[in-house]
Length: 364
Image (tube, rainbow, N blue to C red; front, side, top):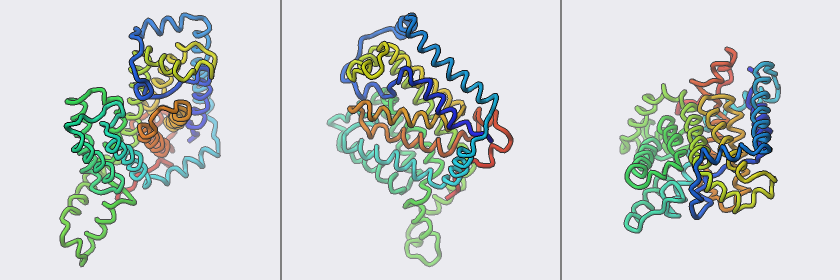
């Protein structure tokens, strides 16, 4: 099938160059809340300026026209076809990729003393227990030890923080789809789970006589097998929800905080546009990328654009905590590798041969 990923990435990048939006968790780089501005009134005020409206409208029109033209012509680019065929062979690396992307931030959260998001610090009373919990979760996931059990504990911990501690942990909602994916996939290869299962299930081994848990892993592998094909959907939808949250809640609904970021890093001197246009451009771009991911529309292109935005943010905002974005980098890499998966617009509009180069995640 003609690839949509690289062309879509280029089109989206061209559409955002005019405003160069900063994609970031605003709360991570601001020490105080911004002015309490009404989001709708702010949006109307920014776009009522003729220059802002022209830049915003022409950028959106250009992206829309480019995508429409591509869908009409559907060119075949050999380089991209080969790339997709290569990506199709990386399925066995996905669990390892996800484990690295979430294990390291969990270990960092334990040592730094925060609950998933750097803005949620441990209390003195719960600090020792939570440090051990997060460090333990992180190292177990990194090693691939009891991956499904540990992922379940991680999901329960996130739910506990969300319900009883601070609903603001939703700023780190990207942990949820990765933990769900690991719950389905298990540790993959290489992992302690895979090694121990091989030793324990071999007749005559000493370890096999004392470890009854490997039977549970084999049972879970079989039980989760039908769900493996939906892992790309879980990851892209989860990543899309994260983007929509960042754009809608952290930018458009709270433009005062976004303006603080623009002022703090003097972004208007980088590209001489109205500070309000920076905030609106960032919010709309994040929402657009998020909706594209949720719908499975130009999925690999949207993942490539998101990876580019994350990278630009890390270099453009030096105070943005690196560990807080490792999960997003891992998700973007996994989505780029896997593509849209089932239940996606890409599948719906693609030619029948779309599934021929689908990245398949093999069973353990």
